[in-house]
Image (cartoon, rainbow, N blue to C red; front, side):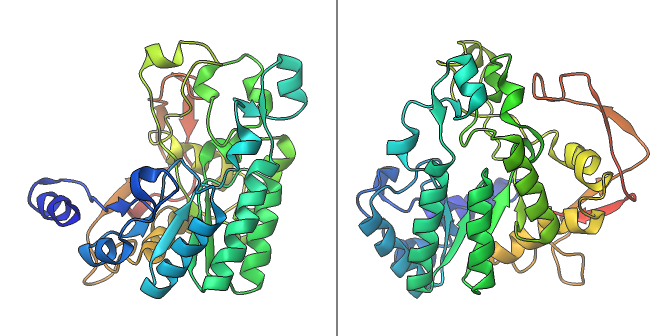
Length: 310
C-alpha cells in the first residue's frame, strides 16, 4: 500500500505526499506494525497520530525497533487516564466554567516517559504539538543531554491561553488544549531559544454542524493551515520574538531535516523548487472562519518580502 501511495502521488499529485505509518496496528497501542517493511517501502516516520501509545512496554519496543532502523517516531504525548473526559485545560478557567479539565501533567508524564525510553534506545523522537511549560523544560533538558529529541508547537498553543475559551467557543476545543498564560510564555521563550524546532499547524478542521454541537459534544480540532504564516509573522516576527529567517527555518528547513527530505526546505542548486512567496506590503483578511482572529480580521504581515522554501 505504501508503495502504491508513493507511486500514484508521483504520477498524479500536485502536492508533496509523504506517508507516515502507524506505530501500532490500527493505532490501538497493542501490537507493533511491521516497521522494517514500512520503512523500506518509503514511509518518512511512524506515529499513532492523535493517540498516545499508553503501554510503556509497547512504546519501548517501538523505540528500540525505530532506533535500529534510524526511523523517526512522531509522538502525541497524553496519559489518557489523566486526561479522560477532559475538554479544556484544567485550571481556574475550567473550574469557573464548570468544564472537565485536561491537566498539564497528562502531557508532561508522557513526554518524560518517552524521552527516557528514546534515550535508552538511542532512537529519534519528535514531540508533537507541545503545549505545557513542563514539557518544554523536559525537551530542553533532553537537548542539553544531546538526546535525539526534536519538538514542535502550533500557532494556537503559542498565541492563545485558556482564557480564550471563556465564551465556550467549540472552535477552540483542541487536543492538547490551549493552556495557561504561563504555558504560552514558556512556549514562546522556547521558540526564541531554539528549544522548539518546528512550527506545525496540527490542522484538523471539522464541518460547521459538528462544531455547533456545543463545547462538550464538539470534536477536538482547529483549522490552522490558512492563517498560520500570517499570524506568526504578525505575532512573533513583528514583535521580535523570532527573526523572519528563523520563522522560515521552522516552517521549512528544519522539518525537512528532521524527516530526512534531502531536496526539500532549501533554496539551492539541485533542490526541489517548492517555494512559497511572502509579501510584507499587503493586508489580507483571514480566510479561516471563527478561528481567532475572527473571520474578516485583517492580518498584518511583517518582515521582508521573499521566497521561502516549503
